[in-house]
Length: 395
View 1 (cartoon, helix red, strand yellow):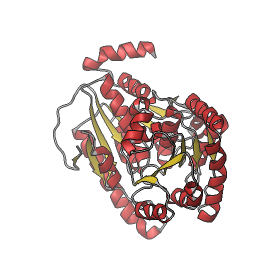
View 2 (cartoon, helix red, strand yellow; view 1 turned 90 degrees about the vertical axis):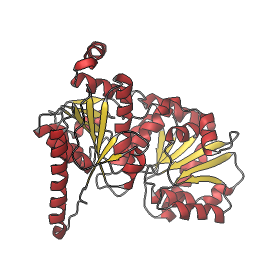
View 3 (tube, one colour; view 1 turned 45 degrees about the vertical axis):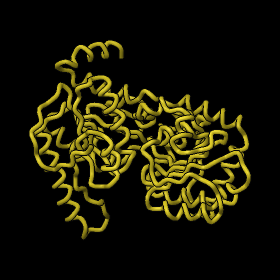
């Protein structure tokens, strides 16, 4: 359930009240959801709200929960000067909304999960004297996190290398990227059943994360003649909404059997069913793959100036957990490059097993619990105090 509200309402406080700020992509939502789940296991009466966006993905993901969604109208950042006034007024509106809600309904802590959706809430929390924290899953922090990190009491990072790209005064703790506990529970059998796969065949999972990835989809459909050959492999392809119909038609034209979906809330089962994954280099996607122990072929997002997904992927490549294919955008180039990476891995089980072992060595499946413990200690009080004291002694 999503309580979609921009208006004020009076709500009695629970001993621990945590607000997450960020949204617009799964990568900015799922780490917060993972920490919220871990907080509930730690302090069952914790109250959670999300300062998110008006993008449909926020409602789709949070709609499966009972957390309140406070939607901010956020501007699109543009270099075109004639758009700056609209950007300014929209950001001011988001700031006023966050200030009003945080003043009226004061949380114990505000946690930024990245992106522009986290900026107003973290800034206003800081001004109101509310403790703040940042989740930074990428090796190269994004613009929002670089700006907000000095305002936060603590920054939770997936990779220790992020410290080199943050101011020295920032209090950074390397915890890993929070992922949902279901990634530790899902089994291959559950994944096979969930997606109607053939349990006797190996599974290649293709995913562009929550919104899909057009260049990844095109690189895969360039290789449908390769996938059409008699093989022990099957495909589970998550396309994103925009490319779903086109990808389904491409598979049908080439008579390639594959399970094609635009999106799934059941990513733990998808990863559990996979023997190999083709993925973007998003921090959450790589954290999930390493926690489960799945070898990866990574095509990092090519349109960011800082190429931060390449930096994420390089952490896995150095450990022997992944192969990186630099996304050249052109399907005629990406298609052969992807085939060159996939063919030997699909044919060599020992190589895949070695990569899976390397992936597991990088995985931090308990990152969400670690972040939740730190947040509880930061905000100790009331019935949570004794539990906090016990955790602090253990950390």
